[in-house]
Length: 93
Length: 268
Image: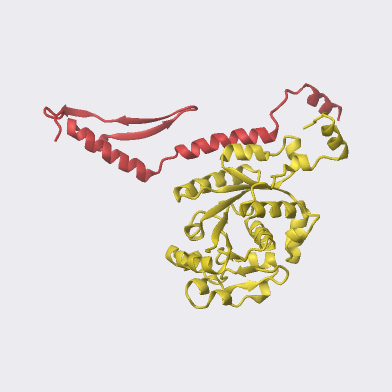
């Protein structure tokens, strides 16, 4: 009991559970909103391939689209080998 | 004049949707409106037992939506409260028994017969939810001060906005003692996170348990804090915005605390 009392007296004050709950919720909701469905990612990839193909010859099979998450930001990363630039690619169709 | 249809929803199960629907239905009927409460939890009906009308069911909402009976045949009249009717769920079907088209037709019919229709939405975001919201004019989201309930409420609010419905929030089962000690999310935290309009605060209240056990309306109990909170919410839903939202923490103050705040020694 005495031990308990001491540890209570000297322990650093933790945030009360209600406050912890609010913080966790706010983070969870932000993450929930960043979640992208596979279907959407696939559609996005197809659209990007279409646009890129107008300007470059690319290796469609080895194109990779990922979403990387860090603590404070989400980034969309696209990796594709370029085979050649199209000569007349900059002209609008 | 056509009646309005309000869906009571939450996303998560077990936060008090059915109790809220029963209580608000009774409270709105006590204000003199003709009210129908509709149990849309098809296959898991419960609003009938909460209201104490379980042994009078003949027709149900699926019968009515499929045109197998008339509105007055499916509406069970409450014995204690004038103008209150229950349209029960079917217990043998499942949630895909009705389509959204069925529901739009049903809502049209109900609008002509009642001033206010409350729809008790099932938990989840599947067909049962779609059916419950498709014909609704307004929505009330019930949420308890728990992380799981708030997260699901946020999801439901997003889905309601996508259907051009701006929902209002009830924070249910607040335990003032735990909020005061910092152990529970306060209603302010919940409103902060969800950022929608608050329409009422309801405390955890033993009277809700006993009234559910006996199948009697909690709003008839003058001593029930939850019951009285539901009556105030009903008035606000009917457009009487002057009715105050009572903060359960303020309401919970003891005698000395109240004296203290009167003379300027505010503790909370």
